[in-house]
Length: 553
Image 1 (cartoon, rainbow, N blue to C red):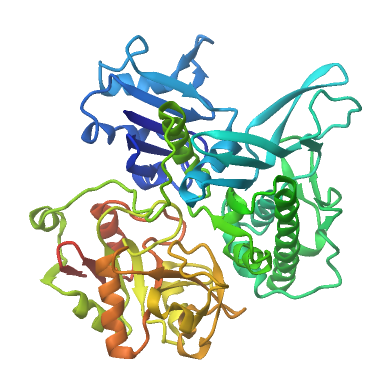
Image 2 (image 1 turned 120 degrees about the horizontal axis):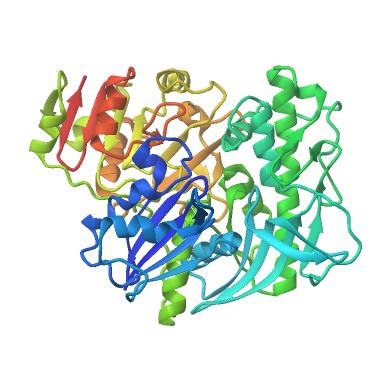
């Protein structure tokens, strides 16, 4: 059985599964090089490499499956694009299309649950705005957008809605929805970050920059509480309709970094406290202490660490690493597989190297080069280069899904260089205040980082406290935290070997690790992307670990 899950909104993505196995999952931005791209169909051109027969596909898509053409008639755009790839795909054969356009939050929760390793769980989703929710109020049909949802899940595909917050800007008295629904005109914690990011001059999808600024902030008497009675304040975050939300607070409109950092500090502090309170409330209601979280808010690795440290010890907490909307494509594919096949097998997520397998030969590599020099190289040679304060780009295997570089599309550097943060930020053209991540050999992780009781954190979901900040200043943020990835040889042999060789040279089992891209660009996907990034920057070294070749500019 071939299953395709598709998200058509921002962070558009496609997940292709053969029975229970993910063949690939990738975002459109990796293919068309447009950050946060919204159309997934550039990825469809990659399908024939993986699929010979298009007759028996099951396609599950979000937001939405149909569009109106110039004549005003709606048409099935997924069928149209798949039929362009293969005449064998048409609506009258065994192929089926499932419209999940009204189940955005459910797909976030589905994705997290099937990856968590839990037999049953409480799932909490918080993002900017999900699917429309229709209801009748005061005798009229109305709709709002979900922004917080909670469910219970168990195998094979049993789920129950526990609570849903719906954003609706108007007042009403009588409504046909039951008490599981909280209809209000407040926005979500995630949207508050997004709109703050927009006000600061970034994209609303670059809320991670606000998180980075928050660590430079402090309590400021000129900034009042942003959340009262568990809800974002409407006199600060105001709205005129479902899609036009802005901040009206003169104090931070001027470009004063410290004032904005203070605002970000309060936003970070109060939203993470509010989200923790909500999770505890839902766990009390469900009685299920296995907790999965997903949705854009949980890209906030500072909040994830705060929540984990403050949850009772008997609660098991799983953060879905691909919790952006790209992950809903995996949720759609996995949910459909488990429901159609009554599959009760628990498969805990062990890797997110889900990208397209390009498998370049040495001949392919040589044909792509112009003035670059290529030399034979080993993992030990690369470690030595890094120990001498050289930036080395690491390219191998399938790319990582999600926004974190985990050693297949990474830029590596020496974490002990006290000036390294400014150096790499300048090369990548990033803002000076943004933190960097580190990758540590798992067996040494607890010597260097406070993992809050975790044995590992392989997907960089947490910004944790650093135990030896003076020894690795390059990856320590101003608040003494580092977004950290733990690594075993089984997870990524080449990357592990490079860090181990670096450890033999420096006695530090850690490497500075950031995504292989320049500011404002998606992470590189193809070798052409990697070489072009090398040519268009001050980067000098590109290591192709699969081929043991070093490209030097």
